[in-house]
Image 1 (tube, rainbow, N blue to C red):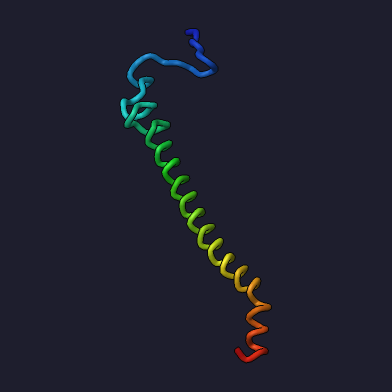
Image 2: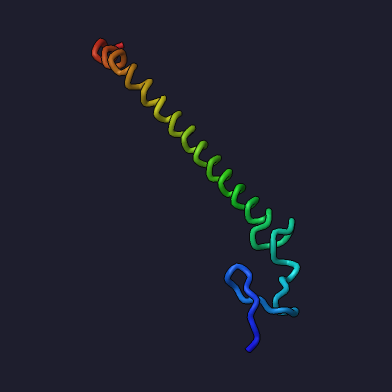
Amino acid sequence: MAKRQRSKGRETTSGPAQQRPQGIGGGPGGGGGGWGPLRDSIRRDVEQAISALAFADRLHTKMDTQRRVFLDFPRAMEQLRSGA
């Protein structure tokens, strides 16, 4: 019986079946953990942050308008009572 070589718990075989294809790996344009998926993930995160900031800005503007109306409410009511 032939002895198996072990490398970090996995069987190794020699030959072309064990070699990795060129397109897979950490290359600059390859899939499987290259810069492409990371770049796309960062782009999605930035787009989400931009939309969240835009929403917060719109909400702030609306709430500021409401606050100003609320602070001005007594004066407006007094003007209505006095008929001005």
